[in-house]
Picture 1: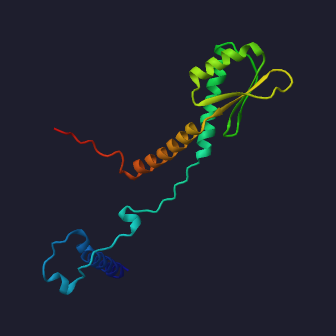
Picture 2 (picture 1 turned 180 degrees about the horizontal axis):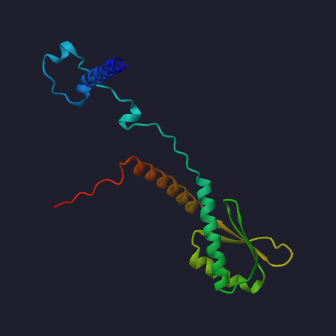
Picture 3 (picture 1 turned 180 degrees about the vertical axis):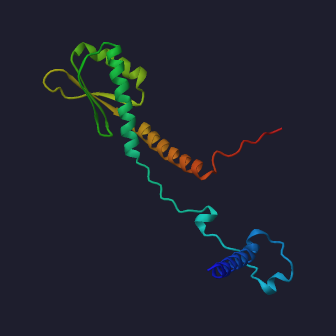
Length: 176
């Protein structure tokens, strides 16, 4: 049994030694001249994924970014309406188009317009059709702001990928 175990150990050691000899060209380029007559000179060629090149498919949900921005604006608007004591019946997001608002009192229309002009420059305010009681308005996100939000979402996704791949941000260089 011990004799059989010794042969196995010697065979494993010999295989490891041969593997290291065949890997030697991959570790360094300075090989003796006689090397190529006994062992291969070729190095191990890494695949594209091991070299750092990988095909990525970037999918950015730009519409979702606009919806998230509108949700944030809706919460800010809710806070500002309460702060300015402007009472409303309904306040909801309408897809990626904007925010629907129904005021309780007609006299709150001017303070609402002033607040929108001062704090919500990316939105246009249009008076809508009244639904029973209250005054309806539609805050519509302008196209320029929508495009900017979508561009920022794409840029952020690209920056995240660059950081994860280790190539961004570039090292700072000092100029003398």
